[in-house]
Image (cartoon, rainbow, N blue to C red; front, top):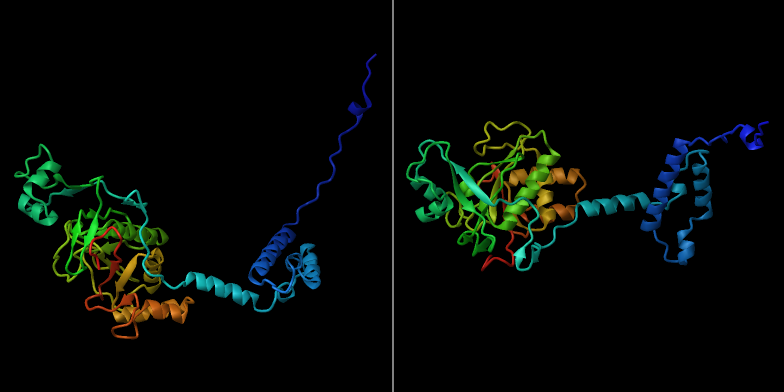
Length: 367
């Protein structure tokens, strides 16, 4: 005879599950976030801590009804008048924070901390007609330096397409700016790395200090990732490898100055040189993104932009919610000269804008 327990003969009945009401859940979550915002942005100094954390009875009852899904609740029933305006003002102030004085670059163990891509060596591809003499002139190198960089290569018999190493990083030192931007020089300059987001017009004229190269790379790569469908920007002159006079510029001698093409609404005729940009061709929204990223980086001394492009940029910033105080601090326009604005007018900047980075403690007699 087989015996079975009562438990084995009983059918297992699954208790009915409560269905989650998505609408009520989302409403509860959103109301919770609003309450947190109210608590943070509208502190009540007249209440004790325990009382200040508890919502008023009318607010509590309104929240209970809304959480139960019994109807909408007006915002003025759960927060004090003007709270949303204060939230919006705080967000705007954070976005349009006034630029501070240029910051010091981080230094560890006597060397700058660079987190962007850096080259360890630079190669030049010989073009038809280029000779050893031309190579020396371009990269400010003598025969002995070029031979040391290219052991076993016959530099007197160069052929088109041949790759010649023209620079390598010295791990024991780093780049430094000496003297004024229009009278100084560059020590141990380093080249700007290539990127799919910008085009270097003249690599032998694109040497700079570590902070110039790092900030330009960071900002232009950020721009390219934000606008992947835009054509790449053109990067013009920074400095020669050793700085000093570089035609036709008055500055660009110390590795702290760089020329960059304006973002355009229409495609450029060529990406081999800067072209004139009319006011109605300037993409002010994209240029403002680049400008703010440069300013937020905290290492810019001046930016030179044609005054009529400044007017377009200033109007765009105000349309996006910038404060009058911010645009007055940033743009020299409507003034023609003088003042302490960061973005200034200078002749010859209707085709490109010019960024000058501030001196760092690692530089010498920099000004």
